[in-house]
Each structure stands twice: as C-alpha cells, then as structure tokens.
Length: 323
Image (cartoon, rainbow, N blue to C red; front, side):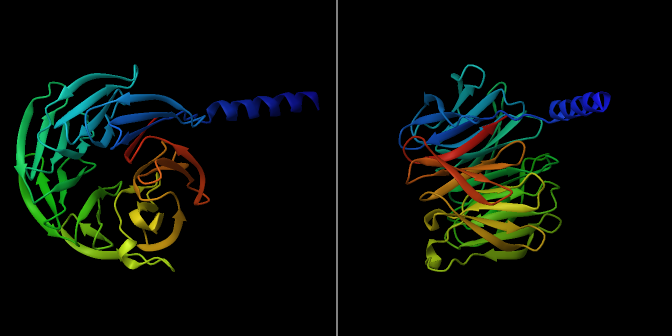
C-alpha cells in the first residue's frame, strides 16, 4: 500500500510538472490617454502604464515576443517597446497615420496600414528601412499575413475591399469586394480561408484564397439589439481553430462563430464598444478591450462566460498578449 501510494504521488507530481504554465502579460493601447497599460495575467493587476505618442491604436508583438509595436496614428510613427524592460527602445518611421499592422511569421518584416495615404508600408523590422509601399484602397486598416508568408491582406474602409499583396513580388494581385467598412482580416490557422469583418455592413465575409472569391457571408442577430448596432470589428480564432470570437462594437457583445458550420453559436455580453481582443497562449481565456467603459473583459473560452472586468486607460483600442 505504501509503495502504491508513493508511485501514485510521484505520478501526480509528474503530471503537474508536465502541465505547461502560461503566466501572461497583457498590453492594452489606450487611444485617448496616449498610453499602453501593462497587466499581469495572473493577478490581473496593472504592472505599469507606458506613455507613448499620440493616439495609439494597433498593437502587436514580434514573433519572439521581445518587442511590442504600437501604431501611434497622430504621431505618424511606430513606437517599439522592449518587453523585458517595459521601456520604449526605438521608433520606426511608419508613414502617416498608421493604424493596424501585421508581422510575417519569421519576424523579419512588418506590414503597416497607412490610413491617410491609402498605402501599405513594408518595413524591415531590425533596421527600420522601408522596403516598399503598395497602393491599396481608401483608408486601409486591417492587416494580416498568411501562415505561409505568401500573401498580405489589407482592408480598405472606404473602398469596401480586401486587397491581396503577393509578398514575393510586392504587387497587388487581387481586390475582393466585401460589405461596407471592412475593419479586420484574419487567415484561418491552416491558411485555407480568409475572414473579413465589415463594421457598417454588419457581416463577416469568408474568402477562398484559391480563387479570392467570397464563399460565405455571416450576419448577426440579437433580440432587443438594433441591427445597425451589430458592428463586427476585431476577430480572433480559438487555438484549435474551431471557433471565431468577434467584437461587435455598439452591441456590447462578443459573437462566437462555429468555423465548421459558419453559424453564430453564442453571444457574450461584455463592456461598452468592444473593439479588439486576443486569445491567451493556452487558448483558455479571451481578453477584449472595451472602448467606452475603459476596461478589459476576461472571457473563459470553454464556458463562453465573461469572468472579470479590469480597468485600463481611456478609450482602449488594441490588445496583445505575451506568454
């Protein structure tokens, strides 16, 4: 009995040791305060508030998590924060009014949507050198790079299109018409589909990258909520790729879509005007920035329940999560 007890205890300890521990740090850009709030993912306490240039919106980590890039729209620059020291380390000349950006999987290039100039700026991350500029539609915002690094997609708000750039040639190869005011684009984990949210159109377009044609449109309906308030903006796939979480702006909800059936399966009530969010590295939590309540909601992915609200700065816009 004693020998069995010892073996069982050792086995249990082994299982605990083998279980990965994700102690995350959460970064939230606050558009009105010109700051980035740094939150400890374990305690959900604010660790630091970093002052940045005017109107920070898009925020993204490098693939190695050593740097955080913050698009300062009214500062016309990209602030770079050292994630070890939580201090600004340098600035990148991003072009006018940067909004959202995407980094290639190797961490060598960053693609920046320059809203005022209708351009995508391609920049070398290490040197800060501009490698190229690609003209797209009016008011580009959403940016994404395909998992195989072959394509970059920019969405243009006023042109209502998703523009596809061939990363080898640096040329525009397709412009796909979607619904009004597209905000964000995301490839599925396997790269077989491209999903685009349209804020004013109130829909998500699913695009086949083999043809660059829309194959499905997904809309939203919540009893008691005006249809015009259902405005999809930020989107994130779950770690297993089986669900998509989408922020619905003035509807104050996160829509949850089954990616296999492409049907909306649930709505989660959060703060006012959720804009962008991000999954935790283990896929168990979803964090979303609520612009008008100046807070961040923590959602449990398995139960699809909002667990906690965490105060941040004024007009939180973007969010990044570092393991």
